[in-house]
Length: 68
Image (cartoon, rainbow, N blue to C red; front, top):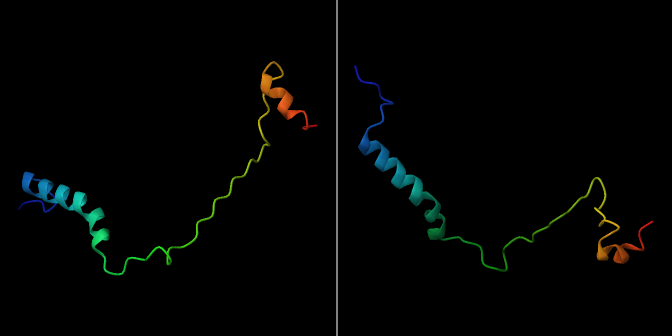
């Protein structure tokens, strides 16, 4: 009795070809959204520990003089 999960060369080449081609099939889709239909994107940046300050010896320190 042979094991059905046995990996031979032919199955490996076939699987590799499928894995390489699958991402490109999305470009052939007929109902691709037009630029007007694309959703808006949203990016949020959160600094939970505050913003890092430059060192006092750094010339950029004077730009942070507004900081308490």
